[in-house]
Image 1: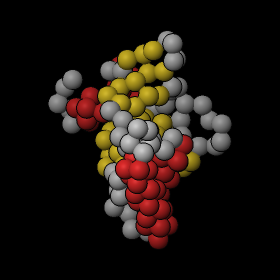
Image 2: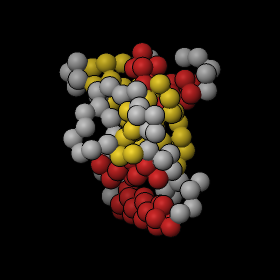
Image 3: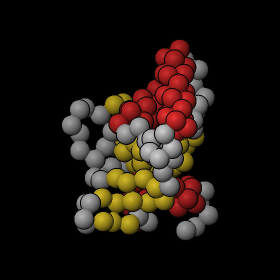
Length: 145
């Protein structure tokens, strides 16, 4: 794990946010209080840049969030509690990170975007593809689908 000062500080803030989220769930369990939307996605993109040494894509780039040193585009997806990810657009690679309740991360998948797309479901109603985390892990481990 990257131990640079900024990564440690932001990881601590994410841990605090997850702790606050848990407190909300305990206080008002009739509400879901799950997901952090763009905040979680931003954390994933931050990790992609800092830990994976990717370059953040210019604001408004369609279908990808970063590029690697070979010029390949990378779509970054971050997961905390959902059983699947959804995505739109095209990229060369996909990086999927799982963030636990203390802000630590685990790489679920980092590889060929097309392999994921070929194994995803498409919803024309939402105009997006989805794939389960379990299927991503199987693809990443080359254990078949």
